[in-house]
Length: 188
Image 1 (cartoon, rainbow, N blue to C red):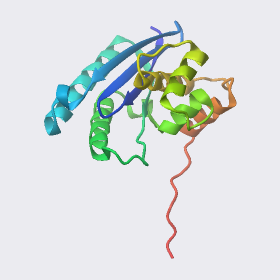
Image 2 (tube, rainbow, N blue to C red):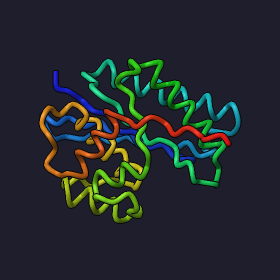
Image 3 (cartoon, rainbow, N blue to C red):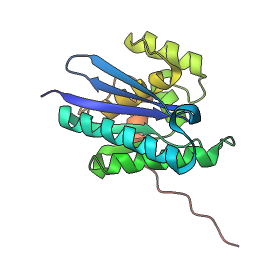
């Protein structure tokens, strides 16, 4: 059974999940609408999101050989809807750890996702979509799906035994496999 790598990009209103198989070069894209109009609000919405994601992750687990999962981490500088995004991110993480072993799961900062495909952590959404197409000839249906595709490629790169062709991509993989310890605050 071919190895599969999963990339996930969640946002306030939805989620994109890409399953990438290097052996065939294929990528399967799924998008979900988690807007309040579709999913409700408060705890009802969180339950809805959890159930949808848990079902999808269980399907992926039973369908094939999931080797690594990368999901977009939080944009810590973001000011808008942080609480709701934190709740949705927590629900997604809960569904992931209920389905896959923790050593397969990797949170990847948004700037790191951008760097992996463009060489810079400051690319805008349109440049990301174009870069995904130019680098891998993968046409995504949305910005979230393009990010999820990059995350799936990063997940595949985590198992590559040989150095990657592009230096900035290898730097991204090395930073995920060998994270720097968190900074400690100095006390006076």
